[in-house]
Length: 530
Figure 1 (cartoon, helix red, strand yellow):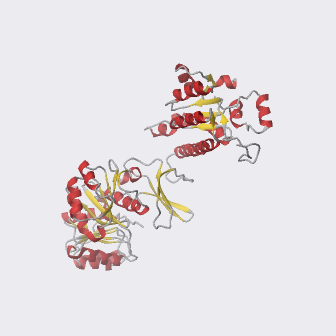
Figure 2 (tube, helix red, strand yellow):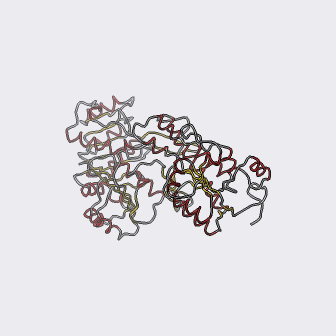
Figure 3 (tube, helix red, strand yellow):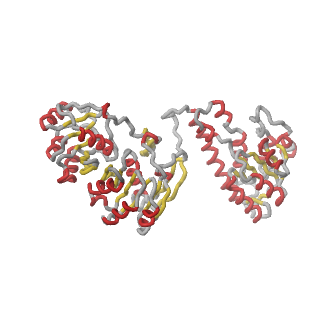
């Protein structure tokens, strides 16, 4: 193949014969077999550094030490071994530029056609508890990224391999092309180098930032999990990415056991349900529709929790997403089927085998397994994009201990009211603001969500609760700016209200609560969810 190369210079060469390879790897998986094949099958000269050279030599692979190539010994505890013109000149020389080749000949630079390098395990090092700064610093690779970048820059002529998983593919290409690499392969390998080195530098930057929550520059490292058919609407393109450092047992690392691929909206709803159910220590069920919980309940077991959650709003629950914080049982699946409930997604830590087998009879349901459940305080940061930027915040995790709350009304909540209020306060966190939530017997019975005025949310919650409203308690995610919301829920039979307090009209709200005999609890913090 003859044409102008990608730089508009000289002759484009597709196939490049591999005559010399430079090998320096931290992860030595498969390196002996790979190098032996390079040497035995294709006559490639293997040049290697320190520990890698020793492993190859002990395995009987012909290997040339790096200091023989450079004429310079490794020094400074191995900090300096490949930072040499005879290495980087061998990688960066443009084969189609006569001046480059003449200079290589003049200085005795022997060209390198293949680089096999992976980096010091910096991420694993700093993940160790109580790792010393000195140890972290010594695990910052300098020569490795330098060689990778030099080789990748000159992908016209040099192939560069960063992972043992690529060894078989490289050998297959060499076998198919009489010991040559192709241009497209070299270009793809170069792209992978710059992805890897940029991520490596980002890890070091993050570590040296000293755990600062909001550094001056925030870098996100994300890996594509899957392309999506479309976004919120069919005309929008979308994909799902996972944070590279996402913890286990989170939605982004959940295993899909059954069903067609998740949609953009499925993922949003599942995230809302999973984060909501993680709030509870007791067996819990949360049913979500359009990112709002239409049913939340705890009970002695997940079957009872499901029944209570579903009974809150069976109409809205149809076609929703369900989350459980316990093993999903066959008995529970039978109850879901008996109620004729269509479910888009179920997410749970584990499933009984028989439960999965029964659910798999429904081809449209998606089943996600996380393996365990992480409490909200274990999470990292939350991100939300805005035009031209990103909002970053810590998760909404504060102490929900009753001892930190105050009761400004004459009447204290009863023991049962206290227990219901504490449940309601956790449950309201997952509801879009403005939120008014009515709770009875550890289950939501009326949900007013996302309204522009709090009193409208109160009216919707009461309407949803219907005959279940009398004897319920109420949670308001932010303070009641006027007494009207309290008057609406009290008129429906609500006996106690939990809210942040802090309004300039708190005295008016307290006065009305006393007149109506409603116990009022102030938490001192709000739970807006926009």
